[in-house]
Length: 107
Image 1 (spheres, helix red, strand yellow):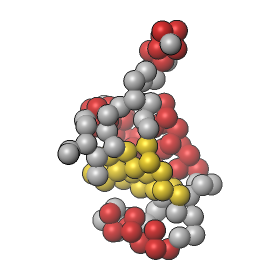
Image 2 (image 1 turned 90 degrees about the horizontal axis):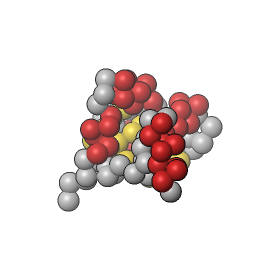
Image 3 (image 1 turned 30 degrees about the vertical axis):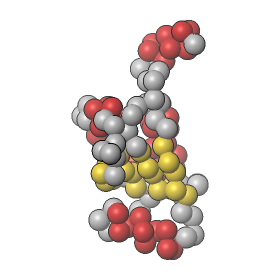
Image 4 (image 1 turned 135 degrees about the vertical axis):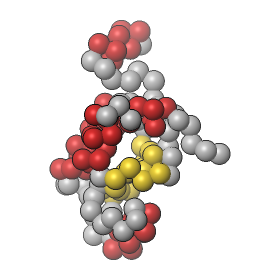
C-alpha cells in the first residue's frame, strides 16, 4: 500500500478518498460525463452516479436540483450544485475543488 501511496503522490492523485458527498447525473455515452468522472476518479472521489439515459422523470428531478440545468453531467458536492464538466474543471483550475472535496457533508 505504501508503494501505491507514493505513486499517487508522485502524480498528484489523492491517496485517501475525500470526505465529501459527491453526486453526478450522467448519460452513459456522454463524453463530458466521462471526462468529469475521470477527474473525480483522479481525485480519489467515491461518488454516487445517477445514469439518467432516457429517464424523463429523473432528468426533471435533476433539473429541479440544478436550478433548471438539463444538460449532463450535473455535479453536486455536499448537496451544493457545482455545475457541469467545464464548471468542475474550472473550479479545479482555480484551486477550489480540493477544499470542497475535503469538507465532510453537513449532518
